[in-house]
Length: 289
Image 1 (tube, one colour):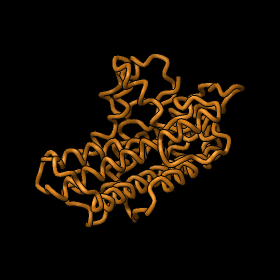
Image 2: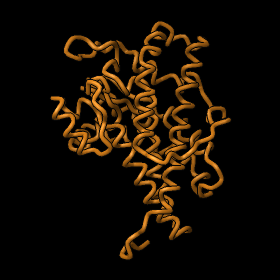
Image 3: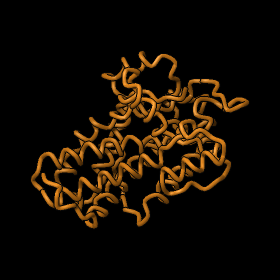
Image 4: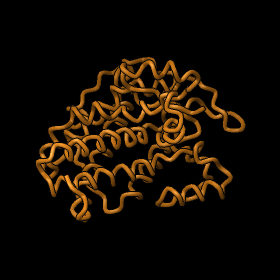
């Protein structure tokens, strides 16, 4: 079964409970790092409470991995595919804009969507959940519950956006080059890549420096472009396979810094997109805060 490890030490027990779940994602510290950098990179037009909420959003960013608890049978099954998309399984077919259209595409391709993954749809949907929360903030700017809603959505969105920027979350070669029939050899490379931001002790301020997020006009095309960009780096990751344990390797550090900066920029751009979208969201009269 394909899986994804928790970043935070407090979730370490879930990894043990998961038994054979082999391939994980950025560790909790890495997800938090990317989230802090993304918030720090935001322009002043984003609400002050949000720009000051980097720590809260960062602490919430490992939350999707907590959903992999074996005691949460339905949630675990439903959420496992949200962290990745194995692009090669679709045979070059273009991805549609919406989740249920994607499920139809998988059926036409003879693929199980749970095995292909659904990360782009998780990212687009959480961006719009954040836009909805921001729209409520525009109406009730001092409401603490609404602000909390925004930060919860921000943490979830940062998690999935960060996952998509890890190239091994965009390929069938997610933990070693896929064997015949698509089976993974479980080589351990995925875990080594996931560990890099923490082991290299990357800093959010350094990652955020010089980043200039810009909201895109079209949400899903931007997400799919990031998916393609990550998939295009798979060979580059495997070229580093023999060096990933060498934390003094300039090539390894350059790769880790480039990917975490890319993840922070992508996340910040989605945050900005959500804020701009929120101005056009009309809330129903019955919604009260």
